Length: 179
Image (cartoon, rainbow, N blue to C red):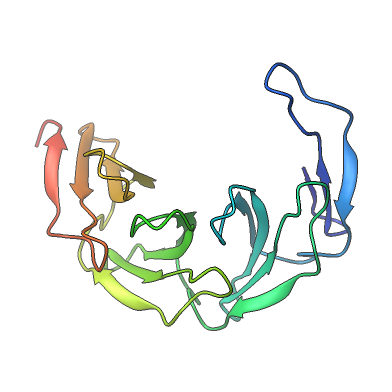
């Protein structure tokens, strides 16, 4: 759980059947942040805490050690300023969550690949995918271990997918809908 007023992170670990007592894992990480995430960005199988500051496009990461989050550090600057949606997920299949941003006006998706110690330079992965859409998601549609970009248009119930090939999202296509 993230306490937005203080930037504190609390975790209740699971034993596979139930959650244990909640405890404080980190203080002051993400105070004033625009968005917060819990994803494995270094590929060690533990969910890390990540925060995003929209005004500067800055992403800070605090790696999990299994019983606490370590000191946070800046992983990327300038990625996603003015974006409509920010996401984290493994789009290249290397078991490390990458940083993804979506710009609604143009349907442009930018990705910054995690190398386990930082997010690399961001680049455009697809353009025109999801302009005027209602929802913007990631999911492994074809079971290849890479998350694909998905958009949903509520008015017609249409869903479009742009599959990841590890270096960009391929041309989008309609998967279901009325139009």
